[in-house]
Length: 370
Ligand SMILES: Nc1ncnc2c1ncn2[C@@H]1O[C@H](COP(=O)(O)OP(=O)(O)O)[C@@H](O)[C@H]1O
Ligand SMILES: [Mg+2]
Image 1 (cartoon, protein in one colour):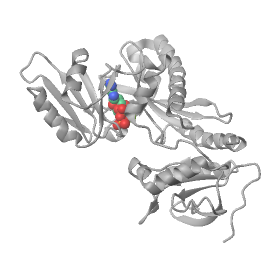
Image 2 (cartoon, helix red, strand yellow):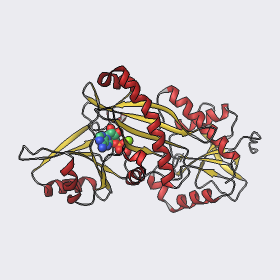
Image 3 (tube, rainbow, N blue to C red):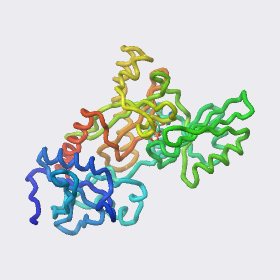
Image 4 (tube, helix red, strand yellow):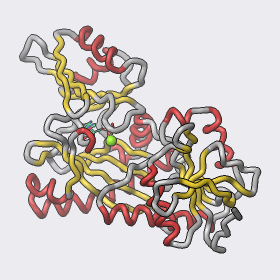
């Protein structure tokens, strides 16, 4: 088979992932298919490439494209990309020596643009956002969880805390701790497990710390002030923003959705019983129409400030991120986390624009010299 000829004036784009012995490559195939289809419609040559197959010294690399039905993936010779969309699927893969080396080779390559080089670490995000006055007011009080003393210190000012793994996602490993002085078992630890959560009650901080240790194992954790979130029919919800750079290379809000917590969940994740909702619907019950409009006007401004500060402080080039924001009972906005490998948004309008922006930003990048 002969090599595909790209459209002149349009960059060749590769979706970067890791190889898999059984499935050719890792990552969300449906997402990759959507990206490739959108790129094709917009006139771009785009394919999936594994870290192993991306040989920067060669002119031709072996890339994957889906069959017409989308069920099979063919390996085809492709020209080296000018832009790399990084979808290394998880931190374990990202930390492998071969992967880390390839990422830094791409970053140093004179003609290849790679953005979002790394996953974010939750602790770093809070450190970065505390550095700027404009963003620090949206950051819950957060510390690294090193010992029971950290908990004691945090409980002095906050009677409810969230414990979260620094490298967590999708609610995995999240716990909530409440202190109630009026009972003999004052420490209540809620541990998320599947769609439900189990509660452990402890009489002493030592007992509590032992139980937390069992749960967190060797993972690093942060402990954070719990924000009293606004609720909808008694359930907390949060806002999820997708930010991407546009065709001019400027940060823009692609869309804002809402996620409503499942009945017995301490987080709002859809796999844990949460649901996708319309932000205005979530807010109007608590805030009424006028205040809801004011809050919703604030969200993009705040999210953009946060995105710019994260990019600046990370000292890497970023092109997209998703962000979880909480709304407290007074309508204040709180940052919970940002993700450098956003999962796909299921709201159709957000999804469509998010796919197009990948190519608009790639086009912008290809016009820049490194
Ligand atoms: N400090 C907090 N106060 C109130 N709710 C929180 C807090 N931290 C997290 N949550 C809830 O838990 C969810 C998951 O937390 P997050 O930090 O996004 O972890 P994950 O990486 O697992 O998604 C948030 O979307 C929010 O609903
Ligand atoms: Mg989250």
